[in-house]
Every structure is written in C-alpha cells, then in structure tokens.
Length: 270
Image (cartoon, rainbow, N blue to C red; front, side, top):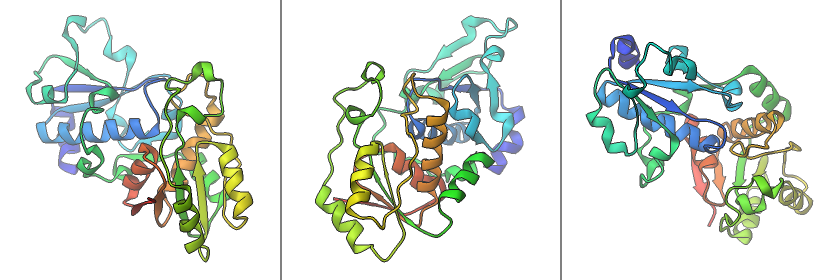
C-alpha cells in the first residue's frame, strides 16, 4: 500500500469508483472499493473514489484524501465524454488503457465468489470513522464486549414498504442457536445488533443483561433513510467492528465487513 501511494500521482490509468444513494449498504461500499483497490494496486491503476451526495461519505472517510474526486471533475468539459467507459466485468481491469476514465460501480464485484476471503487488506488501513461516530460509540459502551449480529432482511425493515427494493429478502437463521450463544456467553458483555428494532427488544426482554442500542436504524441503501438513521447505522457498524468477537447469526455483508475492518474474529451461529 505504501509503495502504491508513493507512485499514485504518476499513474496514468484511471478507475473511478462511483457509489451513490440506492447502490447498496455499508458492506457493499466497503467490499466494492477495497477489492477494487487491491486489483488497482496489482495493475498500477490510479483508483479514485467519487464523492456524491451519499451521506455515508460524511461519516466514513478515506484515510488518503488524494483518492477522492468529484462527479463534476469526472465530467469536466476538458474531458471528452467519449473517453469515459463503464466497466461491466471485473476481468476488464487488466486491459484498461491510459487516457480513458473507467467508471466502476458496486455491481462489478457482485458476481465474484467468496469475495470476502479475497480481501487481503484491513479496512482500517483504508477507511476511518469521523470523531462523531467514535464519540457516540464510546458513549454507548466503553467495556470490552462480544457482538452478535442478526440480519433479518429487507422483508422485515421497519420503513415505508414503497421504498424497499427486495420485498422477499428474508435471511435464514437458527433462533435456538442464538439463544444458546447468548446463554453460553452470559458472563461477558454482549451487544446484540439487528436490522429490526422489535426483534432487538424481544431479545432484550428475554435476556435483560444484554446490550442493545435504542437507535432508529435505516438501511443506508434506501432513498427514504434519513441522515440520522445513516449515522446510527454507521455507529452500529463501528461498534460491531470493535467488538472482541463477532457472532454472525445470518448471512450479511454488514457483519462480514465489520470483521474485515480490523481483523475481528467472526464466528457463524448455526
């Protein structure tokens, strides 16, 4: 990474990672950019992150500001728009040419099998949270803790259903195994995370000793999600990333990328 950053300004092949509202959640933005960066380092390509009106960018930032570019800059009149090409397959990266700007969007990495295993960098070497996120997390809990994360899926999002993209998205999970995990770790501080507030309250009622946030959470990909809800979601991601262990109760990029942030061990609850 250090060698790449030293020669960054001299690289003449350019890819711009473009991630706007509606393009996915926090896990999507992190896995997309991080894996793309790995490939750009390998192929000596200058990778930019396009700033847009995505509120996530306000609270989760790149450590190296020179990697930012604005949409206005990409479409500056000095550029010939014929020289702006959208990448449609990840294999095209090895063949890109100088003098052309290539746009990469998150769906570029969606077809890749076992993508999480292919990410070799810690995300904390690339991204950082703003002070506001860190302070809110410290105010919630300062002790060491284990994190349990259950993603129920878009079907169970507590929001206006008109804005939900995938109404049939329901993740499979083993509730008895979740109960067992909590009970076997009852001597530890446990923070339970879920994308459904009512389910969190249900778990808190059953196990009063666990911690849950009282945040109003919104999926960062939905267009009706407020800035406060996005800040809350990012704070929960921070809390999960900085737990001692992550117990993943269902399939979710949120918990997987939280594990990748600083190398927190992740264990599937099955």
